[in-house]
Length: 110
Image (tube, rainbow, N blue to C red):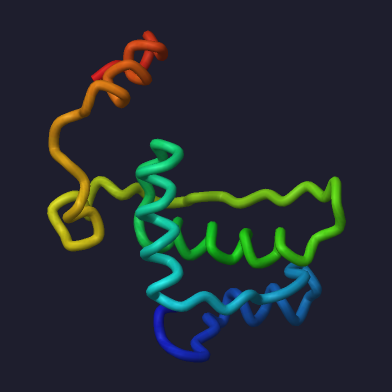
């Protein structure tokens, strides 16, 4: 949830039935930073919820045993955030490096 200590009824039920191993608290700032990092470093455009999920996965990865597999689903898109402060520092046009990456993926060129 997006308020301190908020756990939805669905999550609470999943935890009580042992469907979830652990809850990982993530701040809004951590979620936003991960959203921006995913866009800049990996070309993954996700929203704040996706950034929060990834921030939690990073916290789990820091404590995981070597060779562990961690699945992180980014269940939202950053498209609706393009005109917000979340992506204010991202240029509208691709630079030369970004154009080269785009051309290397024929099925996904912009």
